[in-house]
Image 1 (tube, helix red, strand yellow):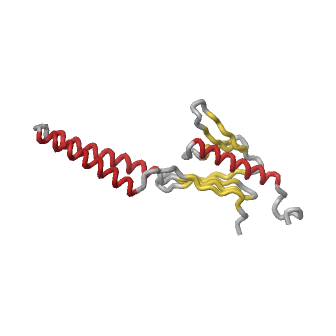
Image 2: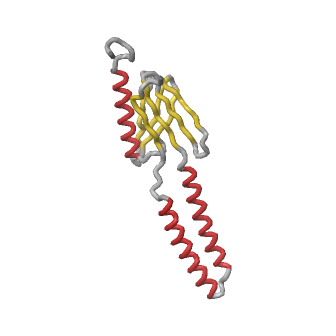
Image 3: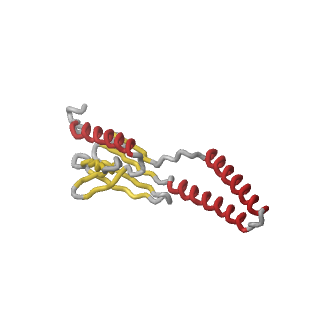
Length: 164
């Protein structure tokens, strides 16, 4: 039986445009480009019609690449004996790190442009986490993870007489 989790987070990039919104947006882009291309074609500049179609293809490709990148996520789990981070890239390849929670330090680096970076430090190695979150969400995540680490460090060891 796995130890109970004191902290469990699934971090994924936010995409505000859903499938229905994407279809509506692409319909509007296609309609505008078709009308513009048709106007140029009627004025004798028929090659412009092809470039209007190229615009639509490039916009579709850019959104497709963006949605593919949104498949990436990371999990951060804290149990009594380890802090585990698993990062899964857009292709589904996972890479994991384990830290001893009593020696792990969370460092927040704040930049002048109000962006932040979070790093987990332990035994001379570090790992950047929560890069996919917006700055405000990253601050909240850091606060919650730091609180969970602090509670774990001050709790009696699991299985001891004080814990029962």
